[in-house]
Length: 389
Ligand code: PSV
Ligand code: MN
Image (cartoon, protein in one colour):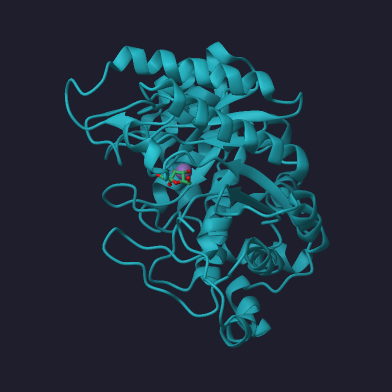
């Protein structure tokens, strides 16, 4: 084995992909939530399912929680439950978008009482991070306006900055704040954190513990996401990804399903700029909803899609690419990239899995466990977890 292929294998074996607790629960569109058999009824059962994803893939040992959807009485006990299954609890996602009080906003609301309530929730999430050992507080704000004139755009930025500063102050030395942006929805006219520039500006002012998170579904069609990734990595401000795929809006489909080439281009920038190294602090999270497809297999497939894009990015001949770029060889440089993208990396990943003591085919490995049939038979009664529950 050459040094290069050993390095490629080592990088793929040490990659860590974080799966979202809400992807294990029921979800849907605003038209219908289709219930599935065997869906977890509490955060513990979500962790049981996540452990299956990790067992099949070997690279998904972290689970993001969403508060209050994953509220439990004892977070240290939940963290222990995760550890006992070879998992760790990852980002704590705050929720300041599902309470009636937040109709006109949360941390940007004109009423200081509503702002106080929202900040209180964010601070509670940091308390939970202390108990779970989570590093990241992930913030996505639904805040915005629907109509021109509805509220003062700059006043809302001031309120946002003030709330973020208060929460930032509360973070421990090893804790971080990841600020997500989203072009639109649920607000349709202005969104208070609509793009990476707004998130970056706030994070820059806050300090080194604040970073931008790139949700791949949160951009206008045609946006060059890999440019954003390259820019943020260069600035040391990329906190992580919320991976998913989109055809039209924030579709939350399986990552790599709509546009695998885009995922490759993103991972190429990550690899080239050192973002795979754990020291860089880039969290590779999924943020998806499996409305019509079986959830656990869909998450396994998503993890595999990230792995495949990463493997292809690692196979880019960096020396040849640099040489072509420096000599102005446009077609040569593009050819180097396309050669890597067009490589079938599935045999390499199968080999790596076998070296890790895993089944070469994670989908088949999961099927063989009989977990799907077992949970369908056992998880009857109780209330199924769902997006927003
Ligand atoms: C809503 O758009 C969203 O998908 C955000 O991306 C968050 O990360 C996620 O929900 C969980 O709150
Ligand atoms: Mn997201």
